[in-house]
Length: 193
Image (cartoon, rainbow, N blue to C red; front, side, top):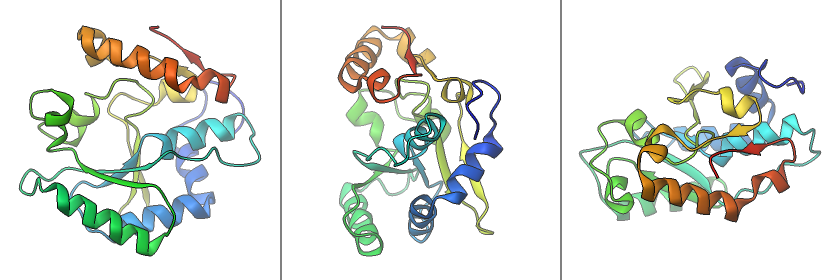
């Protein structure tokens, strides 16, 4: 992926992920869980794209690997922890975090989410609700209900949901001040602060 803001595409992200043995191993491990509507999101995609766009020689370490799925029929948190343990047997030492988005509205103080897309649209920043998974043919699929423009243009904004809710906008601002992405990736501009 060349350093051309705004001109990359979803296909470039897929190609980038496919070239990374770490990302492919993680995608295969998560696929093996056979969870409904299951993806790896947040920094797993975002950080790697920005690392590449900055021509970093090494991947920025991940605080966690956000495995997200949507299963309204089984909102059992211990089940999620069991999935994390299984992933640790497949890829030891990785910071796995498995969360059923069908129950995360409780933690976030929102109304119940109706789908994976709905849950992702309730996240606070535009460059985080982007996720990848493997389909049955090992094709990499991307999910980005808020689009890829900000990610591929080195920008981060509060999501429409966060901008419409003062407490969520405050959470976004606090998160950005804590993360300081502009220090990690100097080409990135964070808006709505």
